[in-house]
Amino acid sequence: MKTVNLPMVVCALLLATAGCRGYAFVETPTTDGFHSKLPSPYTRAVVWGGRPDTIQSASTWLLKKGILVVDQTKVLQAAADQKVSLTGYQYLETDVLRMAKLVGARLVVFSNAEVGSWEALDWSAGFPHSQRVYSATVALRAVDVNTGEIEWSGKAQSTERFGNIEEGISLLTCHALATAWGMRNPGAIAPENICPPGSGLMTSEVSLPKPQASSPASSSQSSNTSTNY
Image 1 (cartoon, rainbow, N blue to C red):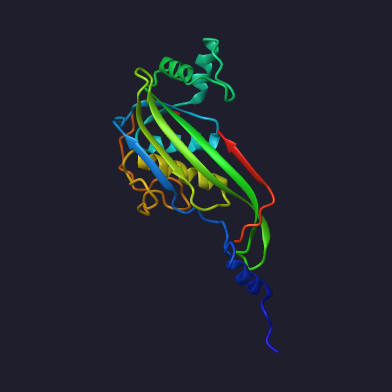
Image 2: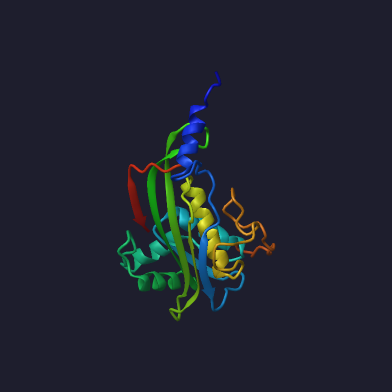
């Protein structure tokens, strides 16, 4: 009598519903974006938002493009000196722009991330195990602190659920920025070397001289949460 591989049979049956797959990789997201002008190297900018991972990913990307990113602590200190509250999510963007101008920044890059999460069954190893999976949308826009004009804006939305939130946010941020800067076209297709999986950062960079002053598979849903930062 032939033996039956039960996990594979179950996987084949589930393929007809939601598919038999894992969530290890982040697929190329759908993006949109534009720019009216791009900053010159060594432009000083503040990256502002509610998720530290989004801020870190955007800051790293911009630093690799030669932008001088001012640390948020300097902006918060300026706000404290001016008795302006920028903590939590109940702040005015005009206050952020004013405080950024005080610390010498020309741009504020506002970041926003909407994240949904679920408990799902992952069959990628041939047997089921529970895993937290995510979908997310990351949006960024650069505002001139003097004029209030939006100079560029980019948005990236995941097309499939993924299991690594840090990697997912990093890749979405990269694709949103690359679209805003015209380094990839809006839509769901992008060159593989723009934001390669496993890095979340661009590799096709042009080296810039450093300034003298350096600045520091089937889804089985049991819960569904969504956050907006």
